[in-house]
Image (cartoon, rainbow, N blue to C red):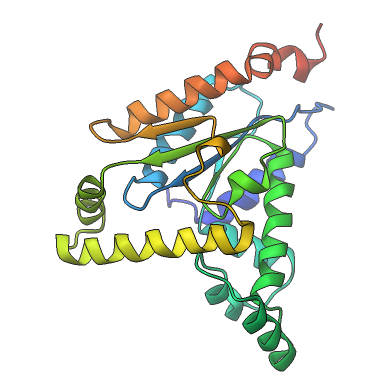
Length: 245
């Protein structure tokens, strides 16, 4: 069987969450955000986290879903935007003036408008629950949601370069350049859009140094913490779903 594409996975997630089955009113599950230093393999860890949480979830709940790069497609789809705007929705420094001028001259939404729409989509998905966001400032956007849980992944620079090179099958020199560029871009994005520092530990429930840990071990650390933090949902979800007190 062919693997589902990222956008198709997200679409099925939303359809499953809203579809009524036997008049079941699903409670809102947790929303997890993962902020990361480049090279900490957030996507691989999130995939293991999905497996962990799905094993702990009630059988009739929609499966956990990751929103990473596929979030861009979801925003474009939600707001009926042309695909050419994908290139603007990247995690890098944003210029309000340049965005405004481009919007006036082209007639298309500028970068700030797209970021606003992205925030709306993140909040909408977070309100559904059982969702993991990687990057995009989601940890700040959903900061005040009571069912949110925020994680920061860090590791020594040399370790991150090595992991990035292994994952993408490139040499260490090229990996170092890309890791440095991505770190700078993401830092500028968080600072210009949200006026916060990306490594502000007060924004996170859990900060993990991934050095020496497997993806599965890190996923278990996060998953266990989420279950403990949101113990009411996990311990009572069957009665919440079925209406049994």
